[in-house]
Length: 164
Image (cartoon, rainbow, N blue to C red; front, top):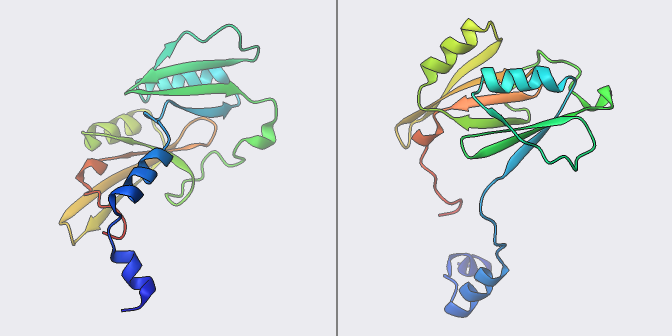
């Protein structure tokens, strides 16, 4: 085993662990996701009716059109776009490998029924993890501005630190 490989498997000593802990940022949680939109009210309607978010008070100090929504321990801040070119050109494009936000869901069938009832285009897929004998179900769809949203039962996935 080379010296480089030996260093990879060595566990940090107490001094090294202490230094690493000091370097960590005092983060608590994800606070909100911000989305530009073509029409704030249409987006509010979508996020409240489709995803169950609640419109909350927004500080009056913000001198631009927007709305704040909250539920599930996370906020969504909607901001009226002044530049159409900053928004997705194709609002129908769905590609699970593209940028998206994801919500963990405990009843995928209920979400799929809702998407069908609202006549929203979506992609459904399942990812098999043979090693851990789990399946992750996913639904992908877009908000009115073409930003992709995923619903998944990702709690089925075992989280293992990389390299462990």
